[in-house]
Image 1 (cartoon, rainbow, N blue to C red):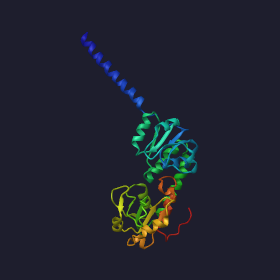
Image 2: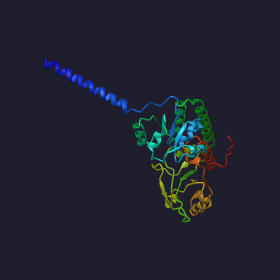
Image 3: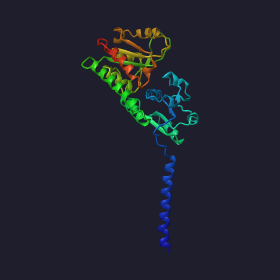
Image 4: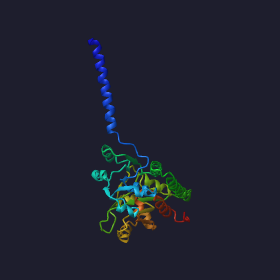
Length: 299
């Protein structure tokens, strides 16, 4: 009898352990994406712009402090900064879907622990952005609008590639938000490296990134700028900065080809800083800067 009881006990214990594991898995697993979400929280400007482009603005119930387009976004509850999420504020909005960039792994885990349905999207590359638009459109019943947006993007990419085909590729320095110290000259800048999105646009518009290192956003000294000797400089600066003062700072680098040949360009529109549906506007500007000799007809 004892020989019979032992196997039964082991079997029951094993079955109980398996059941417990499965039950815990069900408890910890985040809910699936809803088929037609009505209350959506966006945790990135690129996601917010995509939601609005898809016609989902009325369903957005929470955004980050950096989401500013379109203007009605500013009336939405603010539930996050860049990576700091106010989880209490998120839960208070009773979202049925939270959308955030795929690299915010910690935020995703915390949201899922709260039992929220979470969608992560990669908007750090053009391919990723276009796939994100497709996924969002399909998941929210906006396939037709997503298709129209993607068609416009494909046409923009095709036009840019056609303009650049067979032409010289200038060496391009893409500066992003450098320090404005009021010293009267450039000390160092943050540049676009192998980030994916902006470096892809440089290439598609017909330029070559003067920085060929492995970093996504390298910090370059004044001496490094002189050594790299870019032929075109694109500088993203806030619209409220004194552009002429910044221009004078750049002019102190008079030995650089771009400065000597008057090929310094400023981008002050917030659209130029967001990897979202408005990127064709930025691509057009880059194409004009790299190849001003080509007629650029309105799309």
